[in-house]
Length: 212
Image (tube, rainbow, N blue to C red):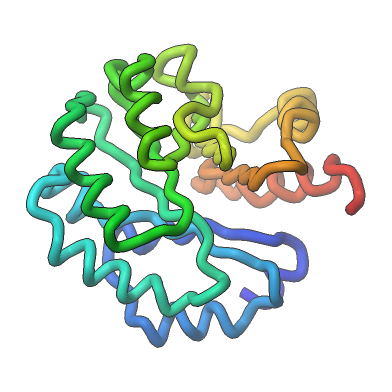
């Protein structure tokens, strides 16, 4: 982690989606990185995929107590929804209301069903101060651009044309570097990890960014 943090300023913890981590583990990670480095943390699949945002209070409290050990190194929480999860204003609103009672920090949502990419869904996300992920590959054209609350930009690039495997060409990375907004909290996460392309692409993107 210390070696990683010398090259990058942020990381997404994806393992929290699959299994819980002890608060001591999060605290150890936080202590291993410099001031200003931040961790995005993926909300457990128990909440998003198993319970489908219903009756999640206990699981949400447990997760937040664990991830909260990151302290000021905690960045946004990532709520990734199953591809089959349709937008349901009442259900989703109830979950985000429960989340906001417990957590006032940044949250991003990565929906994948086409019903989410409409004005009503964006309006609900804005109401709860939640950004919608800009994803590649995009399930529909609107999924490729940031949505919801615009105070935070969060890109998740999964690899294209072969998800999780393909690297990105130089011109694509140059376009991402040019689009990143220094006036906002702007994240770009590479998820094309199967063959190690994520590391190469992330390093390439960093080199293309203007010096601070």
